[in-house]
Structures are given as structure tokens and as C-alpha cells.
Length: 146
Image 1 (cartoon, rainbow, N blue to C red):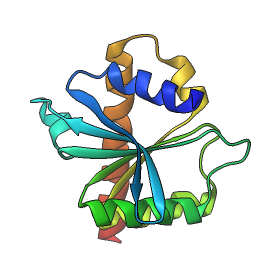
Image 2 (tube, rainbow, N blue to C red):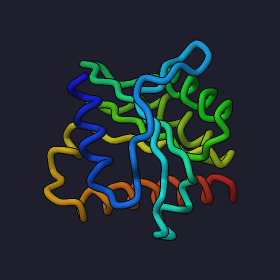
Image 3 (cartoon, rainbow, N blue to C red):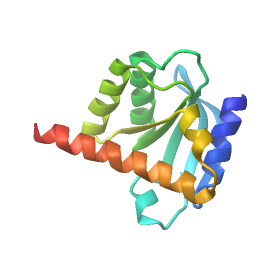
């Protein structure tokens, strides 16, 4: 619950993103936070009108099964972007699955505890989100060229 509160705090500091629901059941999976994008900012709007948010405050890294579950839930809800707050990051296989999903225009942006501890302002929250988005999009575009 504390990690979900940290994710919500981060999101609330990005103008135009609003938490619209908490602990929503989607099939067999529960989505921790749903986010509505009301921004007119072109960088944010490109992420879609609706973002799912999953929070994993685990001692271990998040693995491929969680990533596949998020991809499935995102696809079922018809959204483009999912925010994954994974306290200790994602495994190598999980990162490959995130890239595979991005090639298919389904974006999972991962935020770690270490990264969140470095942000000190709303502007830095926004920049971290946009940097993650651009980096994943660029990786997906490179992958498609191969």
C-alpha cells in the first residue's frame, strides 16, 4: 500500500495525469491505479488517454510473467501505456518482454525506488516520465529496423 501511495504521489505531480481508480479488477488481474490523461501536452498525450499503473514493492526484480500479465491487461483495456513501479527493477527477460511489447505499440514504463528517490520536483517527475517514454519508443523503433 505504501508503494502504491508513492506511485500515486509521483503521478499527482505530473500536470494533466489524474488517478481515476484504485485496485481495479481486470479479469484475473488487479490493476493498482488507473490514470486518466487530461493533458494537452503533446508529449503526455502521445501516451494515450488512459494509463494503467501496477506497483510491485518486491525484494526481487519483477519477472517476465508479470510483464506478460500487464501486456495482456493493457490489451484487454485497449490502452497504450502502462506504468510499472517496480521497487527493484525488472529482470533481463522482463526487459526483453517490455521491448517486445513496445515493438507492438504497447508501452510499459518501469520506475524503480532508486529513481523515485532522485526526483525533487514536479518538473523532475515529468522529465523522468517523458525520458522513459522516449527511450522505450526509440528502442522499439531500432528493434523494428533490425
